Image (cartoon, rainbow over all chains, first blue to last red; front, side, top):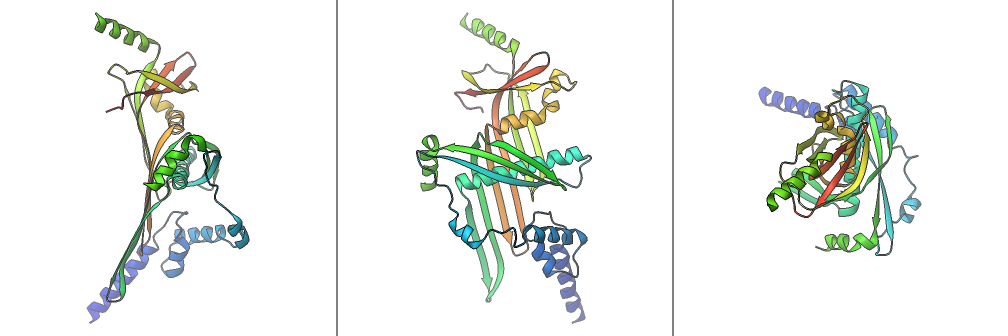
Length: 188
Length: 133
């Protein structure tokens, strides 16, 4: 009985440590993880939670009316759409100089921006799977995939602050040229 | 005779400019760059019919030999190639334990023409009819 109890406690602590392991600043679950495991949270995860909560403060969120009024631009054969996305990248901890950190963070931000463009152009494929056994969720996972080809995107602006790099990338799509191709890619 | 003439023409065209096959790959995991590669190799077979796309000029500010051009100016070359055509693949997985993300940018092999002058290098991607192996 004692052995069983010890095993349960050890596994619980191990799970807590695993969940509170240092996460990147951009982890969307950072605040959740810190909130659920406050006793074993490391300083790194606390910092990320603070950053996350300050970034998601209610003042920065758009109002409900603004969200309802916002409409995604629709492409037609006569229109030209200008897509602007902002990608974010973090410098790794093992860099040897600030210049290298900036270069690597910028690359990561560019990749993120291209991914956002790919989401807008080709869409996202989502797959979900839940396993329920004895009325309990045993496993739950959601997989998303983006697969796109992007041409002629241009970096408009780059900003690097506190190890976080933000890159603004712009892509102009001419409806007369691309409407048929993109419309067919969604229908098939 | 025709073969010799075409070989001579090919040699003459390569005297002024070098042509390389380049490919590029970036991998980002959890918003951090984990892998980057810019592969370049001189072309060893005759080039098919081609046309140059948007030339770009790189000013040779660093002291590096011609053979190390790609390692010295990797950033500029990468930016130029990325601006033309890139394949984006992104995989996200969310479970009860957490979230993982892997995004990669892949530029498949392309012909890149590099023309060296005294203080600058003119690079241009070549659009060819047939696909590379």
